[in-house]
Image (cartoon, rainbow, N blue to C red; front, side, top):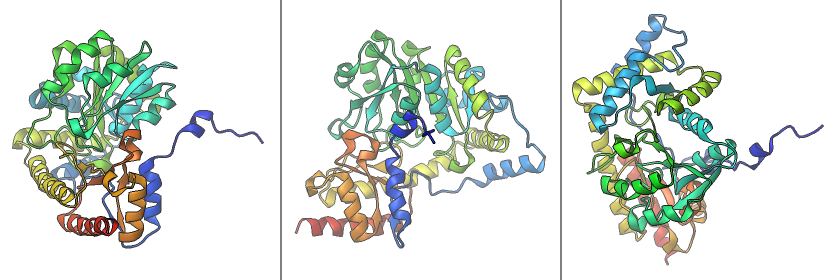
Length: 390
């Protein structure tokens, strides 16, 4: 019998995160710093809105684009919070930000198109580009300059085949952000080479010391930016699977067709819950979001100072809830360090290579865990590093 699996599927590498945590699942008493999920519970008012939706019998499909009331609220939220202007008609509600990434790339990629991806970055970008027939091109970033996209590194990798750039800030796994001045330095390059920008802003509400600046807020880039976000991180709604994509009309029409044939629509009860979250944010000045951000900031500072004290060079993260220390000084790359740490001290972290070749000497640690777990994990890591240096 012939092999029915496509060559594309065969050639896609398994997720570096999932592969490592398959090992973790086989062990007991492991402290894990690997999951990129808030340890907060969805606020009760949001949960109650979802429950009430079910009680009322709202269990049908919505329109493919999603509830108009929710799209209007998102449009106002983006305008109010980030000075980003998308009409409700150019917003599509998706099954999480993950679907938004998928359909956005499928809507714009033709076979052979090159898509630029900052490296290190979130694990799904590269394989999704490959599944669409595109060619992912890494743009190196470095802790020495805050893991930002520099004009020099960007220009080096652009060719006549380059069509778009994925812009993932605040960044997973590094915690890097692009400030207004950083973005201004690359706008002329984007325009000169006629590139589309796909901006993944799922961590926009989780920045520390500096308010998030959206690349979509620059009028020079009007009609060449796609904004992807959702409710998983800022509203602790990972399991609800509701996100959104905002796009210029021609791109929005294309990705909506793909969404129609694939997901049809996001779950109705999740949409009503997300709507309640945005209303609450608007009426109560986002007290829940602020409380969560303040707690992450406390943990962020603890993790940064702890890694620096143990001699692991570390960029101080400015956004998201990850820290990305270099383990190069131990003589190991990230994969070896993570495996030995797991074997020796029962602490699970993610090797930096999962996020791209330029992350190979790093590890990613999430601080979306209780301070008790973080302190316990840090004690074990510090002990491990000390033993390595004897």
